[in-house]
Image 1: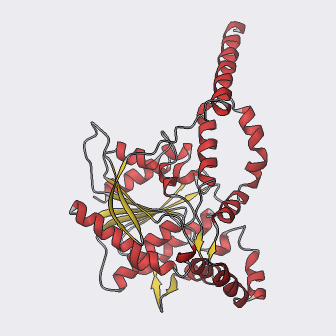
Image 2 (image 1 turned 45 degrees about the horizontal axis):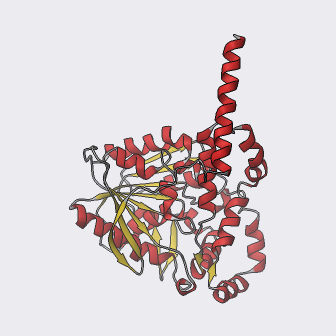
Image 3 (image 1 turned 90 degrees about the vertical axis):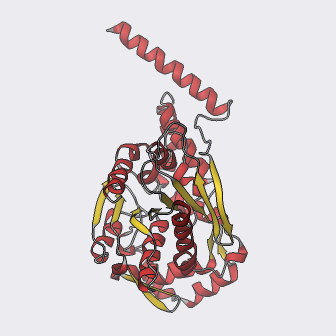
Length: 359
């Protein structure tokens, strides 16, 4: 028994030494190579990519279009090898597309949420449908999930339904009052009123990327404080170290928000919490979640402080026009529920089952 314990300790020490060398000298432990992809179309709203199929994997099922949120880089869906939703979907034989908005600049300051709802997402959907000659699946994370739902609803209301079979919204908060970090700010927002904030975002033009990264990291401030200890205590666990490294890399590559979108998030979400009542005022009309007419999968992270379960679950009764609304929970925070290590055995299989049932 003592020999076995000694061997295990020796093995862990050797692994820790190798990982420490790779982290400090060899450039890191995470495999951050991106899955190969090909540009399909480019316009001012973004670039549509198709990921290259994996050799030897037979095609299976309709295409999946991934819709990122604002702020996070598109590689949130392809965080690192062995922990990439893109890699997983390709491994299942699914054709995978993604629309990339690119970095947000001062010139984008007048773009509002309606730009993505009425233009970017519908155009990408129709291009993918033309490219594959059949309806597709939509998958969105965080604000990207809300873009998907609102785009489907707006197209229905305009009498121009999108060629979508089903949609999945992962970590997409609908009820701001259920977000612990935001709820205390609502009374302050009412006291401050909207004019000062409107003047601020019009003057600044955009919510800069470093600030977006800082806010995102503040939501996990406890993990930031304990991260050095976590690294030391798991120095022999290469997978854990790789995930920490990949998340850090993503944090260093966050994008900004257009000024007008920031204003809409402040007025429509923070102050009035409009979407929790089922609709959102965009471009002079109201878009109702009840207008979504395709099956919907809603996934919430059990440890998510940006989009806690109650904030995500609120969408379920509001999607009353959908033929099916399925609600699933998975372990992990806001990013973890999408592409954390436990997502491999929770979120991804749930998504696979949902897509397969709606071919």
